[in-house]
Image (cartoon, rainbow, N blue to C red; front, side, top):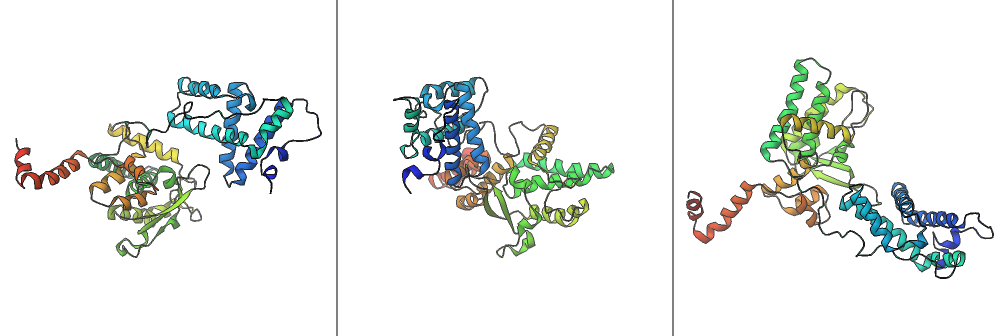
Length: 374
């Protein structure tokens, strides 16, 4: 296959022998068709390709220019408007710029022939140029760019939160309200999010059949391991699967009780979902978020605590308990150890205990204790 036969090349996308009423629009649409074909040929999902095409169209609308007239200045102006007018985060703007860079690189790659096609259609010197450079795009300076206020639960806060969730079950039961089953389900959801370090979406998409045995932990019975089928995907790739080993006996007991004694009372035996609604649907992430916020606010806990804080807490508490970083990394589904550092926030008590261990050999076993008494 020659370069001019590549999927998405200008030769395959442009209509020859026809005089276009609007040649600029026709060229732009051909470029988008070619870009889509090239992305699909790389095995990317349709949702990803659709999103990138929408992004390119929005950029063209914002600049009021066609791609062969774009320049780096357009990227700077557009990024500034996203931040100052729409108040988007740096990570979101960078994601947009990555998509735009891919389109720009596709157009300027000589193998696809778009530069030559533009010069033939619009005159010598009229062709796409690279528009995204290091100096006009948002740099990825930090491993984590979320809110600096976000943090894990302390152990005391987590206990209060889970106790409150359990209390809602008892209150609903005493009042003989229909919501007792839903309250029990939601309390178990939060225990699973923390007990296995899951994200909201991962949790919401669990099925009953995702639980299984772990020969190394027979005491957990059929709940020794959890197959997470909808882990966070890389850009353009399908969800990543992973197996998470069960560690916390109390969480396993809560899941077993829910599956064996509470879940059947919802009915809907043919529904495979772990978490079902009273009408037989699957609990969605926004519903988990809404219930989390209502419990958090009722307890007067800080707004910095969000559903993802349970996952941060899982990593932090396991670190405090002395588990190896590599084990925690695999449990969370992180490819890089540096990503785990984002989730690890050990408590002051843990840090002070480690400090005393370190100082002990230097000052003698009693010296750190005496210093703490001063």
